Length: 436
Figure 1: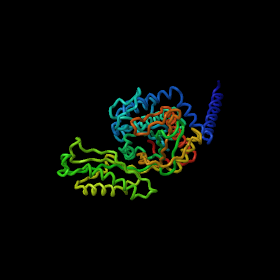
Figure 2 (figure 1 turned 90 degrees about the horizontal axis):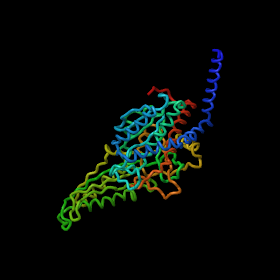
Figure 3 (figure 1 turned 90 degrees about the vertical axis):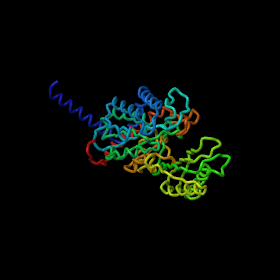
Figure 4 (figure 1 turned 135 degrees about the vertical axis):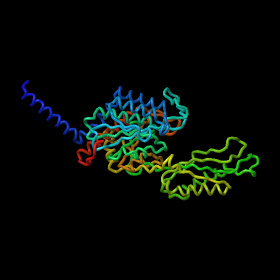
């Protein structure tokens, strides 16, 4: 073939490719991205790969800032894909990068930590670590983000910017998100998306809402000290258990009698430690509690109730709000524009009838730390198999994950990132920023 013909042929190919790219950037082209990804993620080989990863993580749960083996698994899988990453970030976190390496930047987040509880579900891949369990689905979340990474890497040429993959440690009270933000790895990010599995929705359904979604929360621990003695001779002792019992009851009055009935609040005492014998009054009692929503306003009254109720019973009390160990979580508030974007993408993926508007929940999520620094959106992905009995709720020792949810989470992540970058590119909303 002559040089002239080669040049003509190459020119025709170039024009055809340009036409295809232009076509893919139409709204119709955008709408095909989620179903295309879903078909890929439901392939047997892709699904089996995700299931295998999730089970390996589930068998070896690690608590906050101890996710050494989990982050090692994440890094190994990213290396196999050819995805670059930074490690360590926020102690044990991993931050990966897929795309052009240039702006605009969008982030996807998954949490990796487990809970300090014994798994009671008897199955082949039960936790191998006594007293530790993935009872909130973080093993599934990590797997989904790895699945999204694989989809994005396989379609990297279609990305109109860079996707930042945040594998975060210590969501369960440790404020890992806060440390990720403080590490500065998200400073140029235009938006961040996160999701959570839920047993409250059927498989293939999603839910979220604009504005306030989850409560803010904080923890505190109080030590009430009295004077130990024999249980048969209480007149010679000062009973801290009696004092602590009255403290617990009075704390409930802060919600029922002092809070606006329209302002949702919860104060739950979930830890009570004191004494080791049936016939001995202990020297001290420790109580631990969890409070949501207006925690900053409640702090002063919580301390007053504990110290003054203890004093009524001739005891002393100290209150620690655990700011270093378990920082206060702000409320999770979804950005209005990102919520509309989420509804569009999830509608293209699952059909608009499979989106459900949810009411705010009193649970808390440290995803809120990201939303303080940048626009963010958090959502829930259903996994309840309607043919089976109701699944246990998160933080239950009987919690299970329906692994059929894994492709849905992976695809939702990948679709949100891909579409967001395309939307920014076509609407010229992205700002010019330095390379990574």
